[in-house]
Length: 175
Image (cartoon, rainbow, N blue to C red):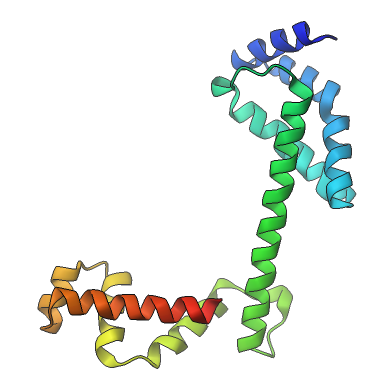
C-alpha cells in the first residue's frame, strides 16, 4: 500500500469507518509495538502502548490533522505515549517514596491517596490556628477569601497570606 491509500484510509477513518482502523492497525501495529518495546524493554507495556495509540487514533478520528506520512505520525504518538507512561511511573515512584518515608511500615505496593491525605492532615495540625482555619475554609469548605475574612474577623490580605503560607509549606513537604 502506498501513501495514496493511507490518505484514503485516513479519510475513511475520519468518516468513522472501523474497517479503515483495522487496516491501519494491521499495517502499522507491528512497527508501533516494536518501537514501544525498544523504548520500554517490556512486551506487555509495548502491547498496552500499541492498543493505546490506536485507541487514541480512533478517538481523535474526527479532528485528525492532515497527515503526510502515517507511520512517522503513529511512531510520534507511540513516543508520546511511552513518555507519558514513564512520567506517571516516576510520579508514582516519588509518591511511594514520600509515603514510605513518612510511614516506614507502609507497604509500597499498597500506598494510597489516604496515606498522602493523612500526612497532609498531620502537617495541617502543626499550623497556627488562623492559618489552618483559613486553609480549611478555602480548600475544604469552598469559601471565598471575603467569606473567610468575615468569618475569622481578619482582612482579605491576611487570609490570602495565611493560605499562601500553608500552600508553600505543603509544597516543601511534598517535594
